[in-house]
Length: 295
Image (cartoon, rainbow, N blue to C red; front, top):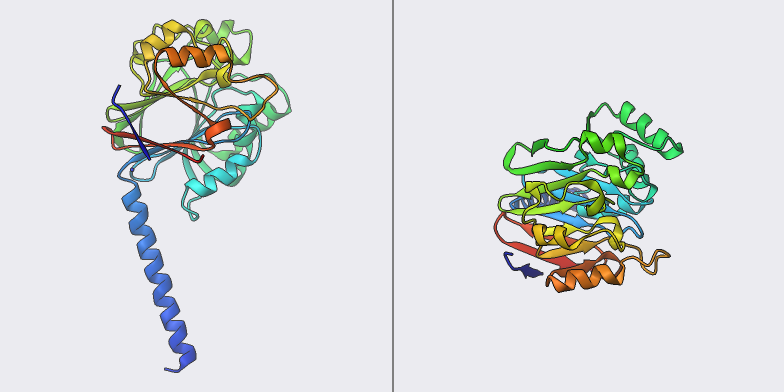
């Protein structure tokens, strides 16, 4: 675990009784361990191949899934990160309706009870998009269309906030492709914050001037580290301590692009990659921030 700089009656019956006591004791300790782990917020960036999938666990038990990757890997990852008995998720956020962000969330909706859903509200009308709209209609969740400027307090904790930076209504009307419509959200816990950018390219989305961008500790690099995903001026404003790139090993797109890696290195930003590091997790009490990687 690395700390990031500031810049979680007979033998037969007797055996049954003992086994019962052991099981009871196990569940007591499970509950205690569960509670102890909830003192910190945890943020996971799952290795799901060429796609995005993140998971936030808040003190008190509230959870957020942000994108689901291109397939079923997200279910295995959630099964490892969440208590085995937990089948509820408080928030599901879909940054935009591309396959490598959407497909896994279809499975999440089929396997978990979801209470709040946030997405840009626009799709291309394909088969996956239609299934998404059917599932969120059947889920009975509170469905919100992402709108820049909105904030949500999470899990009844005023220290935990989800803020929407994009898209705004103008972009929703003028966007020519799904990437431009990406819901850009900032998760803040105490004094620490994480910026999730979907596939938004900072030069296109018009959110670079948003004051809320200033100083995010961890940046989820847009569009899997494509050449034009992150610009100099954008990095200068966000100035993260760490940047997470979610991309598949030996992917056909050449992500992450060397130009992007060089730019991050110029800012002395710690680079973390799911294709090299596997699952990446952060833990924070709102003050200190620690990172751990699978590889």
